[in-house]
Length: 156
Image (cartoon, rainbow, N blue to C red; front, side, top):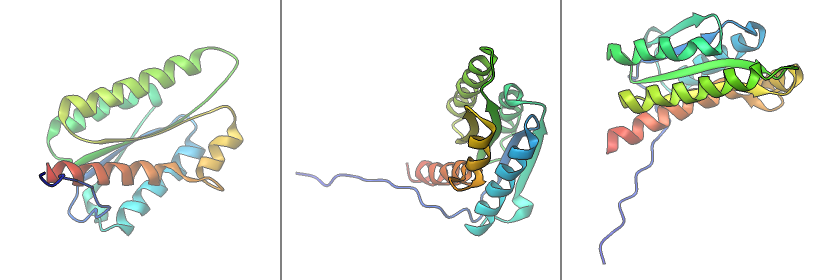
């Protein structure tokens, strides 16, 4: 019986060029996600000069800019950051669903990881908890997921 081939990505961001696209809507939370993503990448070996942060109006606008960055060939990985808080209308469902679906499509179309750090919460307090509060920083988590996926792709 032959050996099983197992591939696991690491968290070494050394030499990686990463584009971070951040939604300005709910910027008080998203700014913490961006800080978390940048600091996690630098802590794992990325150079600040290899990181690009692009701000867009809202979560619905993330995919078109991710598409442009992915198509440029300049980035090894991308990170989408935003915050959509549930309100009294179905707008939340449309924005969050469209953003998630389109970000995933960018990754598949271009073969580039897109770390998805768009918070979808029921309350402002939940958003704060996930952007550096007691539940950690989901921006950092999304950035490291993108790094790990790049490293897996390099092995395949």
